[in-house]
Image (cartoon, rainbow, N blue to C red; front, side):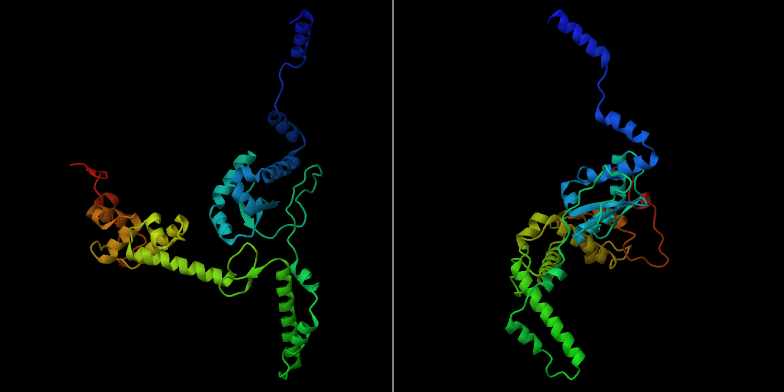
Length: 328
């Protein structure tokens, strides 16, 4: 390196002794804008990085709409996921606050999509929103019925004496025909069971889908009644559609139901042993007196208890020491 290049490098080093990172500059800039601006900025910071907080799958299903009065509002069309996220409310709240570096929210709530982004007072910050949902009512009203369809609708209620009631029936039937034509235009297809039109991505209509799910859950419960200790791979041999989540849900529900029928002092009945096998996934050959005692003690608050029952202390029921290694 030439002397001139070294001299120029030294001057640049003196002029810029340390290049700061954006994450170091940004907090100072936000703080200089005032407390109100800072809170609004970090609220949008959380919304921007929602996928980093809850994961890509949850972020796609539950869309953040904004933060109002310390509550994070989400839109979620999946009812099952919505229930799961509500049960994780405390965990999500803590994750959001940790990401923001401050107490940003106290909880979450679910609602409809907001028409406008939550960006008042900060024009340079914009929250991107998903495309609005199609208004099926407006789309239906644009559907024109054929002369045959209109004639069939006008013939509804001809024998009804109440003209107002007959008119309502004709209007409902016309709306039904319009919706059927609209769904056909959207490539809806007949349900695999009943023939009702379904969205392209669905195989069954909501009614048949519920029946299919109810039957699947009933089949899983039947296997657990016959083989209380069965795990997911074993259940799938009889019920191929079984998943670990569905199995755990049905096992938990059956444990709760069976526990309410077993007396807290009962350790020898068939129900008590089935409860232990179901709860612990233990086959009969591994069902020892110690396993029964420990499991029923853990379920003591779910078991049937007499009015004068008083829960014993742990070590009056379970000896001191680790499982399988008792102290003499």
